[in-house]
Image 1 (cartoon, rainbow, N blue to C red):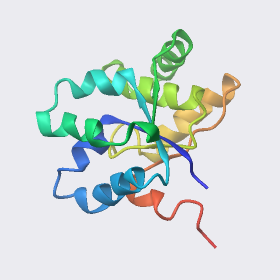
Image 2: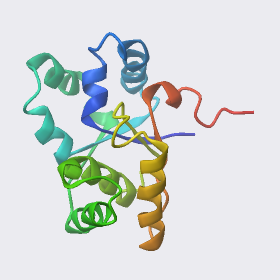
Image 3: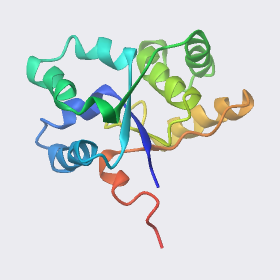
Image 4: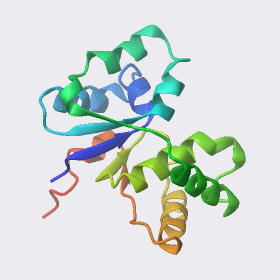
Length: 155
């Protein structure tokens, strides 16, 4: 059972995007119903500062008891730098790497994103997990909100 889900900024934007809203709205409804706890980092909150008001207000509309807030630690920052040093992604993707590192180090059950270029991408996932393994950290599951509904229910 998935209990703690780290979400990145793309999930908030996806709630209002025609292409992704069909799968994102039910995701946030599950949060509102207490079916899972979302992990929100200070990195995500900083990114939301540049988003339109209605996107920022989505976070404020969610029940506080189903939100776990975490901060970018020195260890997470260093792990993010290792992803970049290993060329999993380029330097311009530092915030994406920070999301992955925070989710890894706070032992999230899964990281959820709509960012197919830098996060929900099989080659990138293998790269992140390779660095995690080399550094003694857990592997991180990375999925889209759509995949969360079937995650763990395969039979």
